[in-house]
Length: 558
Image (cartoon, rainbow, N blue to C red):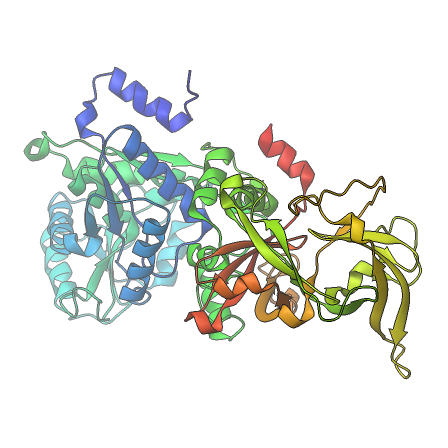
C-alpha cells in the first residue's frame, strides 16, 4: 500500500466525508518580487503532484499586490522555472484581476461594521497591538460610523490622502491572543504605478485580505502553504466567513493546510538578501550558479528530475528541520552518473614524457562513454609521447597512503598503459618540476582495446586521467563553493573563493560539446556546458565526483 503524507490523508478524509472529487482544486501563488528558489520547489511539487494524483486543475496565481517590488521580469522567470520542473498550470491568474471585487467586498465589510478607516500612524497602530500577553488598545477611529468609513474609504481610493496617512482595518478582536486577529490592515495607500493595472489604483490590498479571497474566487479547495502561515489560518477563515453568505451558498470555502518549508544548510534563499548581493555587485544576477534559485540551479546543470526526486525523498510533513545540502547534491550526482558521458580533463597540468614511446606515433584508444549504460558506446582518445597529468597526482618522494605516481612506482593511465616514473626535470631557479620522465609497459595495454587484453599479474592501486598535449583543447571552467562560509545572514563572512575560474585541458571529444550538455570529468566531478554560443562555452561545476557527507546520504536512504 502506498504511503500517504498527511495532506493526502486530509484530502482522502474529505472525500470519504462526501467532498466531490471534481471540486478538488489547487494553486501555486508566488509573489513576483524575485526569482524562485529551492524552497519554492517543495510547494510547486506538492501542488502540481496532487493535481496529477486527483486529476485536478492547478492555477498559477501571481500575488501582485505590491507595485514597489513586482515586475514582468519576475513573472516570466517564475513561469520558466515551473516549466523547467516539468509542470503545467491550468489557468494563469493575478490577484490584480480581483482588485475591483476585493474593493467591493471591503465596502461590504464596512457596511457590516466589520472594517474601518484608521488615520493613525503606523507606529501608533503597532504600539496599540501590544503583545499576546496583554490586551491591545482600541483605535480612537474604531467606532467611527459606517457612513463616515464609507466616505473616507472612497476618498482613499480616489487619491485624496497621502501615503501612510491612513489604512483600512478589519474590526475583529483587540484582545485576541492571536496577534493576527487584532484588527489587521486590509488596505494601504501606495501611489505607485502597477505593472498591470497602471495608475488605476492608489490603494492596494494586503496579502492577509487578498489571499484567502482570491482562493475563494477561484474555488480552490485546499490552500496549501508553509508553516509560518499557521497562525494566520483563523484570520484566513474569518475573512472568508464574512463574504460566504446566502448569496454564495453554492460556493465552497477553501481549507488552509500548512506544511514545513524546505530549509537547506549553507544556503541563502531570502529574496531581500539576494537583491542586496546584486545591488552590491557581489553577484551579477538571480541566476548566479552559486545561488539556490531555480534558475541558478538550472544554469549550474542541476537536472529537474533530480531536484524533484530530492523533494520526493525528504517528504511532506509539519516537522521543522534543516536538510543538509549534500543530500540534494547526492540526488543530482546519482542522476548525472547515469546520463553523463565521461571525458578526461586536466585542471593543473604537469608534463609527462614517456621516454620509450615514439615521438611520431599516436594511438587512438577505445574508452567507454558511460560504464553505467552500454548504449552510450565508445569514443577514441589519442595517446602520445607527451601527456598532461594533474600536478597533485605526482610526488617526487612517495609517502604513506599516497598511491599515485612517484619516482620508482607504477600507475595505470586510464584506458591505456601502465607507466613507471624514473626521473624529473626541474627549473634551475624555482626548483619547480617541469617534466616527469617515465617508461611504459607495451604489454600492459588496457583491456578495453580490441584483441589486446592485458594478461600481466601486476596489481596497480591507482589509475590516473590524462590528455595528450598536442591533441588537447583548452576549456573555460567555473568551480563553485558556498557563497558564505558560515551563517548567510552575517555580511562579514562572504566566501571570497566561492568561484574559481580555471583553464582546463580536455581530450578532443569535447570539441563536439554544446550548450546544455552534461559531462563527468573523470575523477573530478560533473560539469554542465553553458554559454551564449558554442564558440564561448563555459563548463560549470555541478557537483563533485564524491559526496561530502556519507552519513547524511545514509540518513536519506533510510
